[in-house]
Length: 331
Image (cartoon, rainbow, N blue to C red; front, top):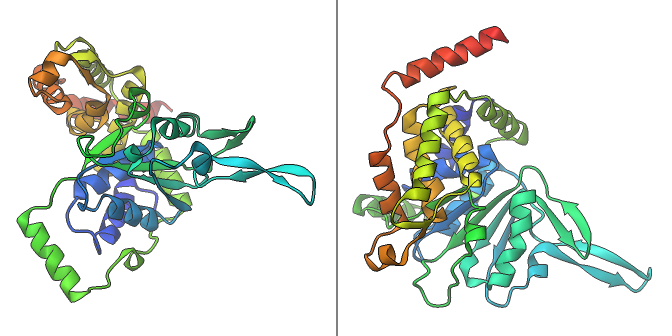
């Protein structure tokens, strides 16, 4: 298997042997995996945030660690520390749970800001410095963090610098009545159903091949201009104090490529940009005080921007496909 669309379909089918609904969340996690991004999932307790992360990690079959974030967790509990070996009279580096392919930071916003900041280097540079020693993280490295809404007791808001390092933010909502009925039926028939029912269905080589396929997806000049117009609009919108960063622009590009690839295309179209814009942009926006008092949130701003920024013409997909074919022929 080297096709991104097939990889996504295989993962989704396996995960949904346990999971009910949340197809969009599984899709976004696959996009993050194929673009080496990180994901922040938010939702009230009990909507399966942790379950989704566990199932996804199991299905991709890579080394996995779960960190339960609480107020008493220290940075060294995550990254590791230097310990003294009395027998040898030497210090030794003990690596922390961050050294895994897939790391889930459960309820990340219950940890203190100091502990949250311990993840910054790992997320951006994919390395960790312990007592002056720099250790590279495994490849691939994917951080999936879950958080409860910041209005809930005992939570800390993530600093903007950390939010910006999450490529995508996903909202896990309550299931529909029909989905919850399916949930009842499935677990009534199989009460002990859990993540052990999901098996690894892809290999590291297949993930690597799919990542390379995504990187090769063609993005036309007009699509790049449209993407940049959307990002620029977040910086000039009257309800926004601080808009999306250049890091967000690059994340937008990569996620757009992955969205196209898992949709079975080797070129990006405007609908790919529109589809991923909320997940890429909303959590990166800092709104003005007046906007917050008016009850406006980031999703409202992004929706307004997508309504007002004109995408390329309807023939952009055809043009992009022709451009991509020409590029292949020239090479």
